[in-house]
Image 1 (spheres, rainbow, N blue to C red):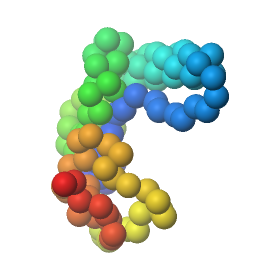
Image 2: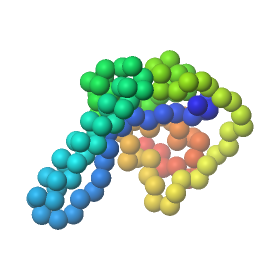
Image 3: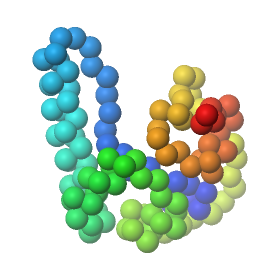
Image 4: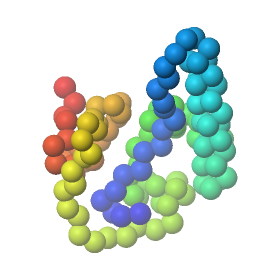
Length: 113
């Protein structure tokens, strides 16, 4: 993992359109996907599934050092860092806990109010 990178662990999200049954089906699918991701994270890192689910729900951001220490990454790599542009319409405010260090790497990033 690059030393200037952050890893975000979050629950899956989606949009649904339609009557109540469509929304219930979407919610059920999201819960299944979240459980699958939590199991995969747990298997890869050695942490309990319950901890992974908590971190996903909390929208957890890790530095490269934290990611290695918690077994989400194997090693830290260096190299040049440059600003990147966000895709059109992408708003970092969609995430609850985006670190300023992450916001600062993107040109045109919307700052939290």
